[in-house]
Image (cartoon, rainbow, N blue to C red; front, side, top):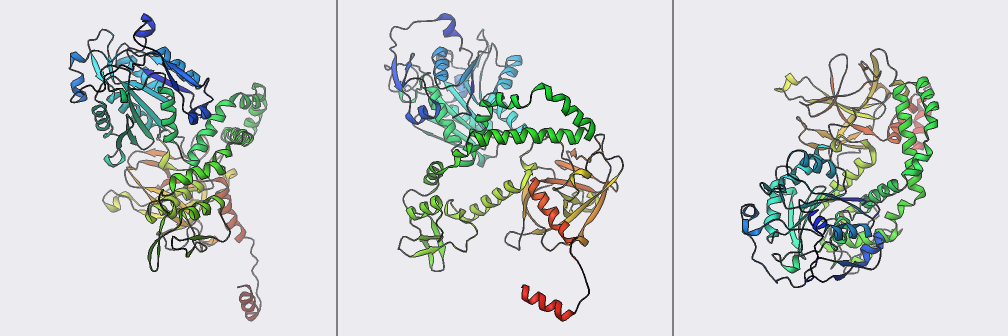
Length: 581
């Protein structure tokens, strides 16, 4: 996987082995074959890896501790255990990943800040379960550190995060429970899932996976031990399982290509072109120049991705692999008919999605045909329920039409700017409803981009009111999310421009900010970005349409201005209407 580039190991004993360089004559090197799928993805150097530190003579089972908390007070357990850092670093290097080592002298203060700072820059973080001060006077478990890393990710808007706890504690299930309890303050209970298989203890939460592996130690069951030389391949496989989707794979592959091609991008933007850019900036103004510069970089990124053929991540082989994951193993999906529930043939359903036949027909298990010609969506054939299918279809629709979605943006994101394609909800005076504002109407801004910059005075902005649709109640062409009061949650909102005329346009006047444009202001009470006009009306930001979507909306209403009205025979007008339709 081209995305994975760097790993950080945090272990207070990480440098002990390097400093002392002990030689254990009783420990024989073990040849471990790297899995073919991992080797194929990562171009592993060599076929086998020598893993010093493996102990084939470990006892079959060691009595586990009663609880993780007891580990901190049990002196008989001793220190967390040394780690063969050299073997670990070499094994990561063999798969093209750089491994940084951090051996903190203490688990607090400046060392803790270093850990959090490096974790923010690392693709994978490996943590010893027990971190002790250098003099052994203070020992703490890593569950609070894991929580801080996840909270840091949440504050930044979320990120794909793989954490590994690498420990000599024999009771891995107790470690798992402690981490799960620590994460309950970050996630809702239903969002955290825990399990174990094949010696791997796992915790899953939105955008997060925590895996727990045992270091080589006489205290740990041998079927739970993962030697240092084996750990990189395990973690790469864990990361692949974490991001096995088609589109998420495309994103990760694209990010890896961008890393590889950074030099090519920089070559396209040499320092010498700063002079003409500054001339352009002086001519058009700072805001428009910044947007133009951003667009240039985005276009170059698109060019790099296209030439690198990143779309191969969603080609036929990957589609077939994902279909095998999504479709039930034993039989095809269950569908509802007028006569009851029936099952479709799995191979027919697979071929339908893989080859997309023109007849849009899938055979049932009884041999009868099941037509999908009139279906607007086939998602229900790939997921557990029709309700879940509707949710996923609508989420994909929101992704396709929204360039910026406040649901996925942190508070630190750039403030929205009122322009063509901005979606807002106008709120009533909060005093009218016991301090909880009501939505007056939903609006779409139609102000041309050139008229949203270099503003000196209060400027009118045209909006078209949008009709709110309930699910399945009439057509809609915009899917967004509207925040609840306080910004603690959001609900999906379906909006439509259907039937709107030029006469429905509304105008509100806004005062520009110091940058000579109309920017939103973050309001903690509402939990989101808000625009305010000169009359004091409050407009909550719901997102920005993608550029093409915004232009299409503007084009639809602009074309109405070109209609030619004339007086003619009413009979002739009616005849024309009948023939046309």
